[in-house]
Image (cartoon, rainbow, N blue to C red):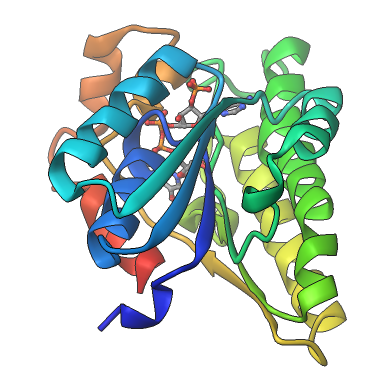
Length: 234
Ligand code: NJP
């Protein structure tokens, strides 16, 4: 089904955990004989583990490059592009997955400015800067797929999650506008907007409090990161 991915170069941001990690694995499984997989996140040690795990499952047909990259830092994105090895430069698929919620379930007026900043810098500015950094190589070859991780929260806001919801509705608007800007090219802009997925997301949101995170999924059956990865690869 995914034979047409063979030979592609794929970049996944936030590949050290959850949906990004599963997406990387699923891409590798889809084209085990020929694929270039570029995995980025802030935790390079975890990325190294992910790469080893994927290699041990699919073998050497998948070339993996791990790069430490904090998408909330524009200078790091700039350096990342400047330093990309030549053979990794023609990126076919960009999965803008890195993202987070922070500050628990705070509501206005108690949301801390620091939490507002980190959510915007990662989910919005980071995603836009990554897209702008990679788009020139796609435009030059008139081909490419950009897949932005949105959320149901970007379509329907919920109380005590206002800033996260705003960032995801910004992703929605940006993706809509970009899709229209690129309509006459062969570059596709897609969004995947899951509901609740059990990953490290809630642990990060609650600052490492695993029992608060577990409560988020009480009484419901969340999606798994593998569920979302299958949709992204499709
Ligand atoms: O969360 P998690 P998910 N620069 O915490 C990375 C959306 N979503 O897989 O940097 C670079 O397991 C972080 O890596 P590290 C959500 O909004 C989720 O659930 O090493 N990377 C890790 O690999 C997000 O856009 C749900 O800490 C940064 C990854 O991001 C995407 O799915 C529902 C970074 C986060 O992995 C993946 O989240 C939904 C930075 N500044 C949408 N900050 C859900 N889980 O319920 C974080 O609809 N990362």
